[in-house]
Image (tube, rainbow, N blue to C red; front, side, top):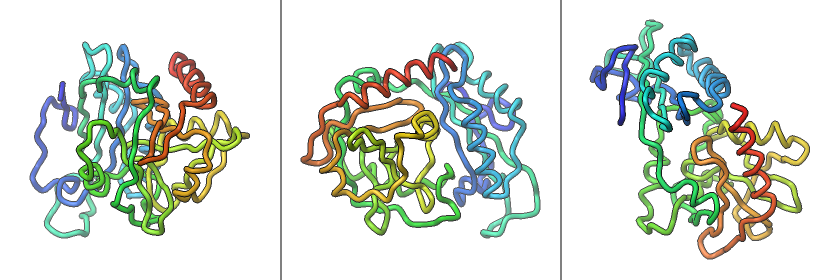
Length: 271
């Protein structure tokens, strides 16, 4: 961690009774920052506000969050800023108090290495044994409870495998462990629905908006990988990554994925 603020003060300490620590009662955003400019700030704030409404959390003023994000990332040419909002400290028990206070934890982290190389070569993935539970009340939002992703990421230690593919308990493809997933079929971009579980990623949303006439939200099954021309992952930090292998099935980085990488480079430059 490069730097951290808790409720506007330089600190890495929260109370032991914090509900985010005890129950995963909160939300988070992970934001790429380059030359002091948070990438897709408005999109992140819109998703955070939506999550706050869903969890009945008061949304902090965006100006406060921006000031704190700027403070912790100061002096870094590139870094990752993570914003966590929790319901704050509380008494033991699941039912929260009537307090409207939230804890803001804003931290800066080093930029991950090797991303640019993966844009070219693509990533290898495996289908995970862990299944995502169905919970429409939480579907799409980025809440703090990520135990499913933690356990899924522990399923392999092969450095050649970069990502895991997560299915839900009904066997439908939802996402990668830390990215959204798209299948390309005859030029159409297919991506799983996020109405029952999973996270509606920021870059996923921008792709759906920019290429609305070419995108379909589907219930995606694993056998659809065999019919896909291309597969790629999308995340705001790592961008668009071609998937070159899922278990034993291979995919060449294709022209649609390459064209979207070019579109993304332009989209980033406009931020």
